[in-house]
Length: 246
Image 1 (cartoon, rainbow, N blue to C red):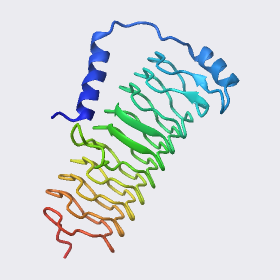
Image 2 (image 1 turned 90 degrees about the horizontal axis):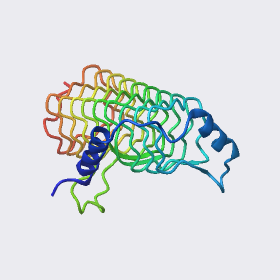
Image 3 (image 1 turned 135 degrees about the horizontal axis):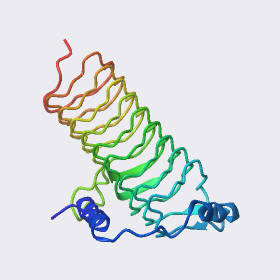
Image 4 (image 1 turned 90 degrees about the vertical axis):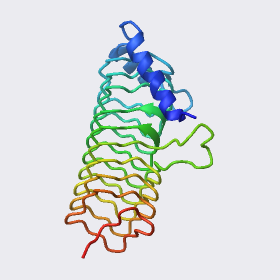
């Protein structure tokens, strides 16, 4: 059975390619007006709104409902989206450079090739396709991006980061069990205490990374690069193609 994530991605692609170009539902000024009136009990209603291509940079969305919104090519650079539920939003081509996404939930979304440089994703829960995304310098500490094995009736749903740039990112104590990290760039990344149980890291570049106390048990590591990596206390029980550090 096809995985739910791949199905949802197909839906996103279909939306992006079959719908005619049209103006967004709201302008930046109109969004600002809604945010100014919003509060915790009465969030700004942006649910399922079309915000394609709108400049929403440097705005505070903590009191907003963006569930299911169309955010294709929108600019959220250095905006605050902390604690939001962004499940099933459409994020193709989105700019989240320097954005605050701490404690957010992002489920069933395509973030392929998204700009997440320096973004704060600490404590987030993400099950999304982020292949080719730029997460260099991002804070992913304490995040839970692991597959939920109790909820896999439609196939394995996991974070996919194939070819993603995670160089210099902080992934300390992050949960990435069964994540797809083929050919991911993790040079100089901080993976202290990270859990990568059964992840697919074939061809990943971990040069100079801090892997202290990280868990690579049952992880696929064919052609992975560990040049200059710190591996004190790291576990490789049952790893496929366990590296030789001697």
